[in-house]
Length: 442
Image (cartoon, rainbow, N blue to C red; front, top):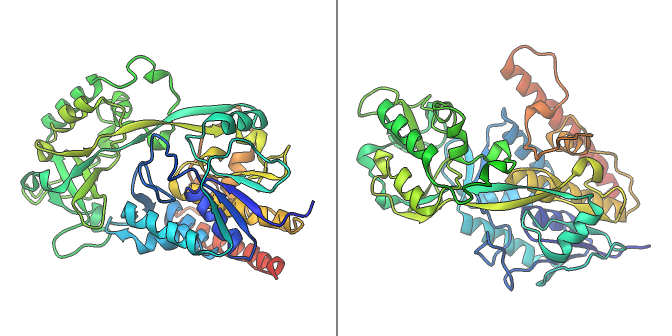
């Protein structure tokens, strides 16, 4: 069958990136999106690529896995990264964005592309004869979910979490201080990008006691759910041991409280939620506590004793396929070659990982339309290594972030030198792939 266009279902991070990668090469895209007519329980904006859990796209440092993933995606002219740069707000060494500005920028670019036709409707049935990328996200429901379950040999689910957002004016800055760990990031004058809320030893252990005994939304069934380690509710982390948070999201390393000129016992960090700086989110505080319990427990933090919560933390369902049994390294369903699955549905975890999977699926859906000449992405790149993880047989498969542990190892003892070598090898090998892609484009 001669395909004349490619369908993309879902205008989230993965769907928008996939549509852009296809359309910029002159191939028509039909982008199906239910918004604004219908929204999931986790979404509130009518714009595309809405960020639900956090406004951070993680580290920009090229010596980190997240920094390398960004560098890889930039080689492909990633739409998501371009729009993130336009909506960037200060966040130390991280790439954080104003959510509203970011989604508006992505929506504008998608809508003005002449090769993208936006169809505002839900998709109940799959046309398995048409080249289609499914990127409907973790809240895929109804008939489409049933069809996916049939072709994806069953689905798995866990609960994903979103952190609270606090009004800036309600933060007691007399009990807090500005600064970035080790002074990293964009520092203006004496201020850093984060508001740090210190806790003494007694305050910390009183907080942990209250946190671990607070009432959750799913009081009895909560512990039976399988949580992804990278997005663990703060109360679940705290229950693993009294000092777990102090060595995790509340670690005080690299920080000095100017009031005491000492390192605090523990620190809760707040990060700007928007460019205006009138909203801050609690870093690492994804939670399943009931709203009144969040108010009670989080107000025990001295700097937040009068905090106004603009949004409480919430939990939402996340569904993903059994990727090792279903997909090949092109994000293509092995039993249905016209069908591709991208985003969190594919088993990647993280904003940029979702966008990267959409980018990859877009490249290979286009390659399939043209006859399928491209090899797999080099597994020395994070994008390629992630697909290798997704497709390797694994009876206990769980979602995965991009990380250096996925890459083929290098026998270099110095950690920093090894990371630099990973980056150099990845970008060189990926550039060769892109040069080959450009040849097929022409």
